[in-house]
Image (tube, rainbow over all chains, first blue to last red; front, top):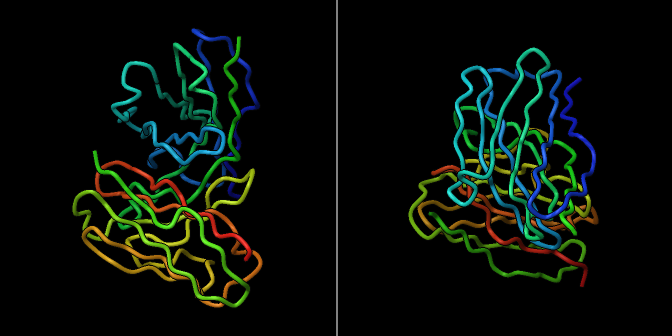
Length: 121
Length: 106
């Protein structure tokens, strides 16, 4: 059974960091890109970056360079997104999503359920 | 960065209607354009990729067209489950999404 399950909701203080996990099952993990996309309340979708677990290769959106770190554990088929120096503007639902291949490169055909992150003092 | 602009932001329609949503890219993206549907509290769902290719399991009342910088998503015979927000996304250079179009009941 194909599943993408993310970790639960987080509440963080400004200036702190958050780490969200994304566990996949029933699909190839190591050879597929996993992207992270966030959605602020009532807003649109924003791509943050991606990782291919097999090689550990990452690409980050310029906006998040230096503040986001993507990682993956092939043994547990789990990807992670670590976002530091949090501010209220980082309050959002964070999604992981599997990219398709070939004609679906950089297209997200399988999504996690989302992890709400609230940044508040 | 490639910017994506959708119009309209909100669209009011009735059951059975035909609706069209437009997405414009700030530079040519060939056919590297995807469309998603999102309902409240849920992740987006892929509908169309490479501008016009229907994702498996998506009803044929959804269709996409366009290339270069201008694209459209068309829904014919609008059904109750189609009332949602729709996003375009360029996949030419990483990923950028449009701001979304909410299809609401007239």
